[in-house]
Length: 356
Image (cartoon, rainbow, N blue to C red; front, side, top):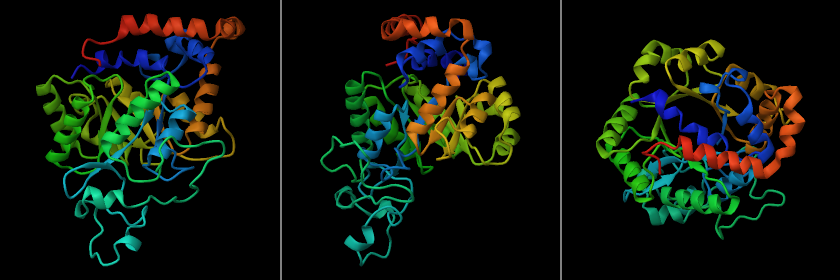
């Protein structure tokens, strides 16, 4: 895979992010040497399971709030139901996040794969940790915002919300099982929805074999989705060989508390042409949290956060700090119109032929 050439499609994404238009322009005009992100591109905000810190995870309500807070991508972890439908659910069982034991008390097995879509749709997702069933000032579009959504429903929400907020919202599905059937269904669903290129889709998995398999399948189908190998240990990826990973993937997703994470690892990954996305950022004491700034300064290309608003605020602070002081006020004065023009020019000149 031409990892480095494909990464150029990210220039379109930089100016489509959910930050104020003036800040988007500032980030675009900052020199590539000012930041350490791959090719000097601004970091992405990736909504971890939706807005997990505020609303029930993997729900349409949670994803919608993440979009309204400025997420660039929403992340559905995917499981297969008994009748072969992809649904958004992190765990392979339904017990932790739903009321399945109350509705189906006689079942001996609460695996997602043991329930039909109709049964799954009867469940309600419960808030976990700091989450609640409401958020101040937010009314979900969906009449039933805390049911388990299908992958198709997540895509539909991304598209409808993109139209409402005036920017493209990407999707970042994870294949939770090393299963050829799941791989095929993910690709088939993306194709059916008009996705063919890398510009608004990442596919991730902890299984290297799964990512290799998807890479082969999408090549045969003429697709070009960005593929990401996940690992709880950066050291494990180094041992496997980052250059080897770059032969079939476009990035790595690593734990921000795992062994080996740091600036040196990010430098090594970038040298191999790989993006680095980190998981999972949580709430800290300030909006422009020092934890985010440390990873941004190291060059991390995207952050999975349970609190989209905090991640967006931290990124805004990071981008603003990259602009040379003499030009800051003049650039801010250009406002929305200039930012929109910059987006159109870059989109026309950068969009890859395979992009949707």
